[in-house]
Image (tube, rainbow, N blue to C red; front, side, top):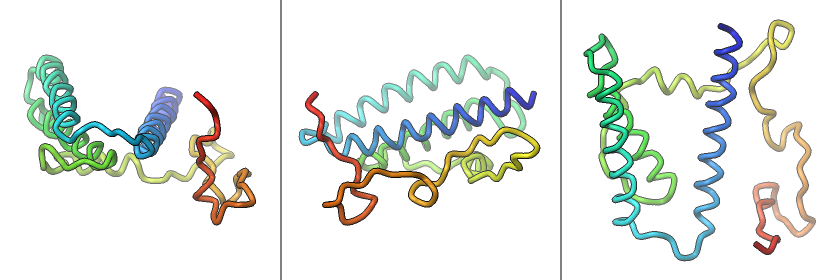
Length: 146
């Protein structure tokens, strides 16, 4: 089981970084989608997910049921909308407060198991920063022709 747990930690970390990067990349788009269009896309995805959740969890479990899971999906959707620069659509609270604990920074004893955390950026990591750059935060550039 430790291997399965470790692989899930790596997957979760990578998915979070991919989401953060996609949101950052979206801020560079000049002709962004309207809020109405984005809300429509997100709402359709949430509705599809709600059907899946309802069929996957047909029994009301203690502390986790389809109603709470759908609320959590809406909560995460609102966070994603805000990260993309749009207003919330559902305005719901997080029904699973313990989910916030999952994303806390972990400390691994590297003598006991493989480390799954990324190296902290700009502390010990090597970074290529142009001489014209004022700070290391400005090193994300679009100098390639797509």
